[in-house]
Image 1 (cartoon, helix red, strand yellow):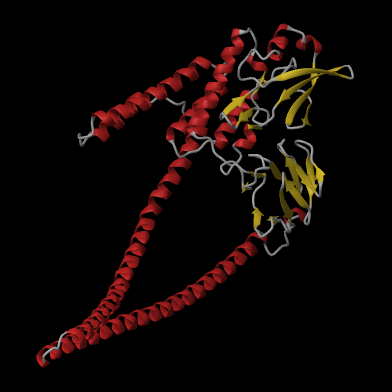
Image 2 (image 1 turned 30 degrees about the vertical axis):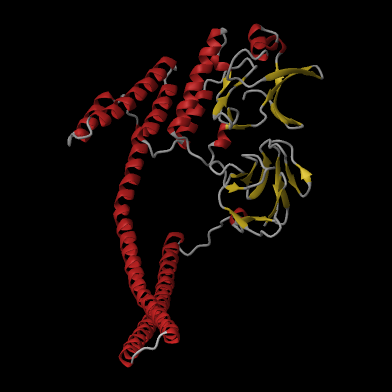
Length: 475
């Protein structure tokens, strides 16, 4: 943004205010076209005359800057494609009204994102100067925040960046690339569907992919990023088999232990069944004796069967319980021995690493004291929830540290209806910590003092912070 900017909150609405709107530009054709909201994709704005100065008020309510939305979450292919297509669409729309696309603000701090529709909202700059590097700044931001999990996402990000680096940015070239990439994805899907039984279908698919894949400019930056991605992929592949084997062995041990225990439990259950059968047989004998006089041989058979079942049941039940008890005791002893050995190994390793580190440090510093600065002392902070019945600590490990109720886009997820999706953030400057409200709906308070939108306030240990109605202590 090339003019002076401030923020104003009115009830639930938040406005970004440009203080240097020039009268001749505001009253011109292009200014009136933008103010009347004829161009889709632009933020709604209105004009105010305050103390003889023209101010442009942009409505950014319920919007967040691209810089904040993708501070934690990485740009995936759908997000990146949607962003680029909206840029192309809004530039075409401006050309329809004979407006210059160079007046759009593409800086990530002032390019807003509608979280409801997952689409960008652009701001039209009413100053006369043009920022030629605005799109390039966006391209660099995209490179930094692009996810490297999918090859097509990386290719699209680098192609867009290379297009912006040229002397003349060609919209048609970017459109054509996206169409070709879409057709290429469809052709790959068609090949997979039409050749399911062909053993060489994978080879054919890969050959077609190489033939139809668009050419991405081969720059030094592209090579470096791809080398890093290949190294990460190789390390992951090397690490994966060991993890699978470990999980498989753990699963096998668990299943073996389960079946052994289950076998012993089955013995005990069989003993109970025998005891129950003996009891039923005894009851049947008593009932039969009341209504029918048994002979001696019949009585001997009844009593013999009863005794056999009773003895067998007691033996099986006792054996199963005893074996289970002994195995559990051996398992607990084994676990305690293993945990003790692991603990000793851990501390020995820590001691060895500490000794090696100090030796290395002495070599590097030549036994001289190194000044680390006050900003590096006591840098660990926590946000402690003060909700009744819940005293949880959340460490602040990175800066900026975002707070909100959108799990994918913040560092601290606060489940409260009064908290915005991206509510506020913590910053570190010169060894001090500041808090900034990101024009949230219900505001941010420090020790009961309300913060203005995008106002940075220094905080210290012991301060009480309210994100809407969610209360935290900073320590």
